[in-house]
Image (spheres, rainbow, N blue to C red):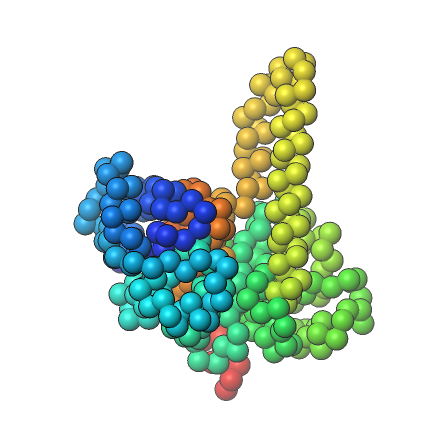
Length: 337
């Protein structure tokens, strides 16, 4: 029997808390037999939501937390002052090894600060990056960093490439994943000072399969499995993908409902179209892990629905079963030696 994977879930984080968060937990428990969820938040509110469902009570633990860190709060101060908040309590469950991972759709700043201050970095990791999976024509690619380190150094980006390679090889199953750095052209001499400094370091790094630069327009075609950049660039890319994806889906739906002829056509292609559109729905790929910490911390969208929460919980199980943290620890320690 597989080892039980314990995940602390922030039931109060996000726009749809606690309703969608609790629902997502129930869906995940039904799908994954070796998952145990710790629902953390206001006990009365969570209990009311749980009354709607039938579930294995032996695999769900309620942890009361009376406070909530709001999105607009200064994250450092909030982490220090709100010790009884759902995010801080989740972090401490990971820190003391009660849980293997935590998932939250709450304040990004609080999650980033709490991850480093409470959970702590793996020895040798300079900065932990946020690394979401994004859809491409060939499957998925890992965008690293997309929100944690707006001002990065070349050494950070090299570590991002190594950690991203470990993640893609072991959770997505891509052997020797192709690594590229985001640039304004394919030529090695192009780019800003950060890219120019990082490029030769990646080129000479024996731990990764570096293929050179990638332009933003080539990312959706899946030319690289691990896409390396600082968080300013990565967040702009991620938000553009989300925006364009939402726009295209909306336009396609509108066109198919335009008149009787298009409605008939829509019925004929409904099944194939649904599968295609699902491929480009970012919620299907779970949340963005904050790699390089002593425990797994995963940030999901603030607007996360039950499906994204469920997929993120299942993502945590794979992460733990593949022992990603230990593999990251080894590749970073090899660099230090």
